[in-house]
Amino acid sequence: MPNQKNIKNLEQLTDKLSKAKSIYFTDYLGLNVSDVTALRKKFFEKNVEYLVVKNTLLKIASQKNDINLSNDLFVGSTAIALSYDEPVAAAKVIKGFLKDHDLPTVKGLVFEGAYHEANQFEKIANLPSKEESLTILAIMLNSPMQNLVNVLNSSMVKVVNVLEAVKNNKNIEN
Image (cartoon, rainbow, N blue to C red; front, side):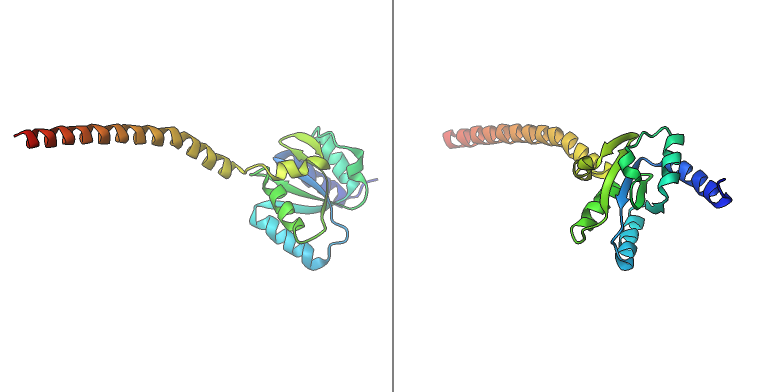
């Protein structure tokens, strides 16, 4: 019979999974306390929640949210990184952390409702964030307008130069 603590934890986990735009399943075993603290700090700065979870509760919570996961995720120690705002934020934190550390190992991920194997992590970590995408879009939209302004200015400069040449030519003839 489940105890009250597990029932409460399951309800909270189910709620968190339902709100997350992305979920990264990691194996953290082997990280020392200072490394885990540093990782949690980086996640906190990017508004990502990092939780150590029981595999049984994770499996039940994911089923309640109709998230189909590989059974490989429920082997060994599991911690999840939940991103509620920016789906790639957690991936970028993990990728940055892995430059200096060997762990955590990504076991799989749920990105915008779809489950992906761990081998897709690098592709997702390299995606631009929402802010970066908007910046790229603004530059792309601005570029044709800037080119048009340059062409129009260039034509006007040529017309002014021609008129100036005609004026100078008439002054020479007079």
